[in-house]
Image: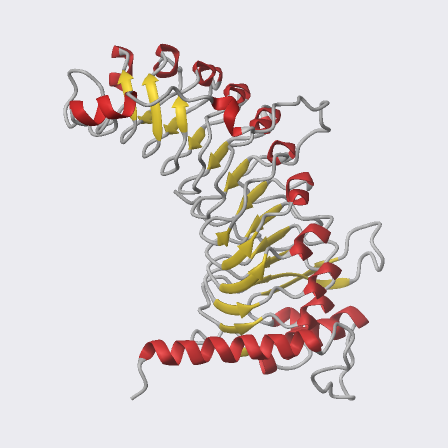
Length: 412
């Protein structure tokens, strides 16, 4: 019997080969499926939707263990499981016509790839495909989805560079690409898009974070478990009116914490644990007046914890373990969990580093934050009103007779 790992490898190679062949066929190839000439579709857009969905089912889906596509039969695409239709909005070409507005196959465990024919679903407002086994590349043909507001491709087996096609979707507000195998750099342009939620965690993304990170109007940014390294951009300070949560766990960041984080007056969660951040925890953190969770554990931070940090009025959890802090104000007792300050250099606290470890660390030259040559903070002009704050669901692009599934639970 062939080992399970070998079977999985063969399936992956087959998926990649099929996806590559589909990409080479081009976006304007002839119809991949036959359409019964006796069928009468209400509009060309519903005929296009039939072609897109049948191509996906017949040629690009290899396994559907929950049989979600079992009823994808015949021309009545609005009755297919996971497919939702609604009238087009006023002002759009064909306003009032019925169109496929959403596809939701979340948690289907479907194996296959995303064919370029999905670009025929030009009226989609949401595409939710999380927790499946789709592999290969994200097709460039998705650029045709000019009304797409929510794109969730998380927890699949998608590969390649960051899918630049998402930068060409003018209506996109919610982007979830986490738990895939995307590689390389995150493009600067991502943070100039009007996105409200960005989830990129658990990929293979590398290279320093773009210094324009703070241009984003997003309320939630999760970039954890990649390999960015370098600076924590000071431009974060420009997100003072919009950012509610940011998680940068295990990203290899190896600079200082910029004092501009204190400008994030709407922030409730700030997690930069499991990095290599150095220097002091800046006292400007006290400016984050709505902060509820602050986690800087497993770094190389030093000096005392600023008094004003533990006095933050809404702070519920402060975790500083596995650093080299030398002082902790008494006010921290109410917010630091029982082991939340372990493995530091704190006097009269249990489970600390040995005196020899602390002495060796502090025998090094003091940290010079300027030596990292991180780009300085540059305030930006006031932005137009931000998109609605996450958590959602985000408002639909146009009225729909169904409830949009909520975005996935936040990564912790």
